Image (cartoon, rainbow, N blue to C red; front, side, top):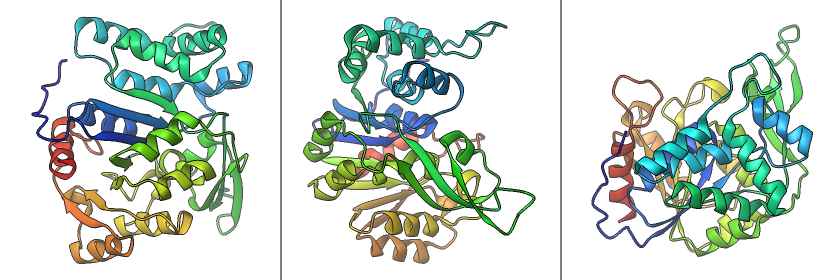
Length: 322
């Protein structure tokens, strides 16, 4: 389905970098590509489950799944772009070794093997899709998520357990109390650092808070670039702030978590749907602690819990960025 393009107003020359992974980042990119002609996605590389995990383990490469989803979200609004998007997203359903693999994951890993260069490979896939933007990894090597989780073990509900791996952390029934990455100082992606430093706007979220959003702040070189950039920094809060990895969280708790993990990082804008702001004064005060203005705007899709509406999100971002 073709998405209508919003008027670019004065935002089309803005250099925008969106950081995250999975469906949350894809939602951001689908909206942002309607607003700017200079868009870069910086994508988490810690996935260790499913097709990505299998390819990561077999070939010692970055997990391609979140990178594939970002590329698909940026595809050109044409029959050509949509066809290649569908090819990239096609997943094999069989009883053999290809079961569960996304064709795009296999294609990306094959191109990396041929070119011997991760960034050049992603740029090539982007050209094939006619992508409106660039997709880069947040680090030059795959990462492992390590979390301290309270209540992870149902037999020891009162204990804090160390859990390793993005998939296990994301699927835990416990409550995450701290998060880290291995290696602690990974090889940087220099193109991603340059994009952040040169941006006019940098956007964090939405997405799985501890496994898609926060890891960017744990990569030292990337965190330093986020602190040093002259860009405006925007946090787009999740639509279901109290579920999944952040069960029982309030919107304010997300901001407190960010401050605890990146104490030097300041924000300019916190964007929130009205559904996650039961107490506007409290959230506005929490945003102010990070130097940010709170912007409350309807960005949720009607009748689809936890899903952003691309045009609503684009309209809200247009008002902020322009």
